[in-house]
Length: 472
Image (cartoon, rainbow, N blue to C red):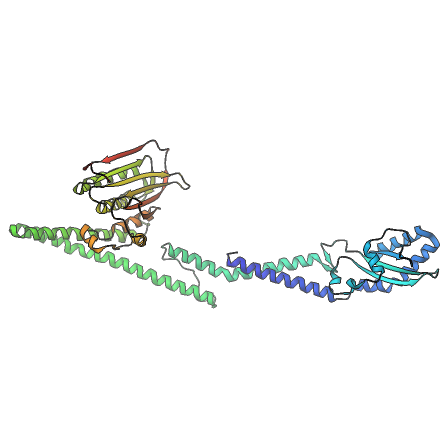
């Protein structure tokens, strides 16, 4: 039982039911039995009347009398002579022989009261002067399901069910705030910063209610901080674009008025300006993605067409490093998403692979459809570079995360491409993960739910613009 509600409910109910049953048993055991007392008072009369019937009418009269006693008192009568034989010649149960010897202790003890069969024993001389012993067997109630030693079984059932209902309500009352708190925590962990437990200040003042209100205050504070961070990021990015535009104008004027000796410095300024402009554009993109999917327009996207376009552009960039871009595409993989976002997400991964794969090797782009339920389109990009430390795999998709600052400066990365990829894929209902390849290098997989996919007709394996014959 892992559920706190089930643990509280079952333990409370078992305790209540046990206490209820024990109370009834103790009350029944300690209560004098009026029926037994009445039978004990009539033992002598039963014996004398049975012997008188035996003497006057024989076995038939004795049977008739015992039957009348059975019907009126619900007991069986056994009468034995001095030799321990039944006066009617019946074969009696074995326990009657023990009772005949005087073993009646089980009927007088506390636990003996709960035995389903009880008996009474009496001895007296008969009219013929011989000594006779009477044993009275007390029969169980006619409906043992509804009666237990004078206590209604239906009443016990009602008591147990009602105690279970009370325990259920109590357990629900104790665990309901925890369930609400857990649901709000899960929403907050999934990125819904507006998640609240909804516990009002005027309702509840115990520890659980205070914990829920503390959670709401914490979530509200986190939402405000994140919103302020997003606004700051957006404002700074917008403010930087104006100085950059003026810088580009001043750069063009400087080129026109300067001589050849300043060309190198001006080219350097131009490259840094382009990098800064690119970083600002990515910051704006990331800020827009962090705003959620409210304004995101989605439509069916054919991934095979998208990947062919990306691979064509990537192969052109790869020529400077003597790389090949291999494409393995499954046809008719259609997903629902934003085309520009998906293009940017996949392109960032491919350009990142081109940047870090070993010179003279290749980058592989694969598109396949998963037959599992739910069906997924899987975009897999593999490079043949140095890979990533295992402890850094989960951090690759954080904004501005850098594994090696020196390598970043060399390749020109700013640490925003993969974070944009992760957010864009998430807004399109998918997920992205990274792992190291056994052959060396990094594998990044993008999984998106398939909107529609026909049976795979063929697989296209091509090298887009092969530049070098050298392969690893």
